[in-house]
Each structure stands twice: as C-alpha cells, then as structure tokens.
Picture 1: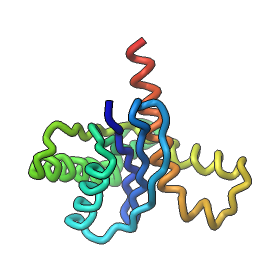
Picture 2 (picture 1 turned 180 degrees about the horizontal axis):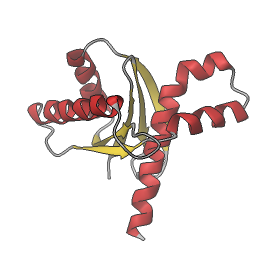
Picture 3 (picture 1 turned 30 degrees about the vertical axis):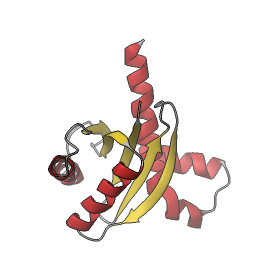
Picture 4 (picture 1 turned 180 degrees about the vertical axis):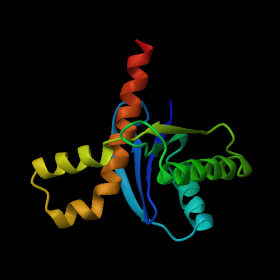
Length: 147
C-alpha cells in the first residue's frame, strides 16, 4: 500500500499531512504559503511524487449545518484543478477525495493547547495539524467501513 496525502486548503495557506505506507497513522509535513494556482499545483504534485501517494484527501469546509459555503466552492474548484493536474501529469490513478473537515481546526487547536503549545506556534502550524486531523479521520472512517 502507498501513502495518502491530506490537505487543509485555505485562501493563504495549505496544511499538508501524509499517512504512513500502511495507512494507519498520519504526520504533518509542512504549511505551504500559497503563491498562485499554477505554483500551488506544482508544489502539491511534487509532494505527491516525493511521498509516493496513491490518493489525496482534501478537507471540504462545510457549514455546521452540512451545507456548502463560499469557501466550500473554492475548495471544490481547487480539488477539480488538482485532479486535472494529476491526470495531465500521467498520475490519473491518484484519487482526489473531498472529505468533510468540520471542526478539524478546532480539534487541532484544542489538542495543541492541551499539550501546552504556545499561541505563536499554534498559529504557525495550525493548518498542518488540521490536515493531520482530516487525514486521520478519513483513515479511521475507512477502516471502520471495512470491518
């Protein structure tokens, strides 16, 4: 089995996390400061290649009610662009999966506060930690479905 990449996509930053090869645990990789869509896609493409990923899970920011928001539309468009970028780079077998990310940032922030992480450090890594939460939740949900 290969790794899965997790993304928490925002307007200014993208948090990036990756699973282990068995798809059991996750770890944060980095927070990417967005440049423009072409450069952003290239950076993610490189990360997919470097980590030999078989799928990319993109956090979908639904409202608390489960409905789409303005940001949801932006993330859906980003995911479509990513899927097209992967396809055009001979990586058509890599799935791009949208996954409900409600509360991922809140969970990541609370976990870091409980661990005594400073507010400054939280601001620096919150997007990466949110990507970890999204990816871990996806992995756990998938393993529950298999049982």
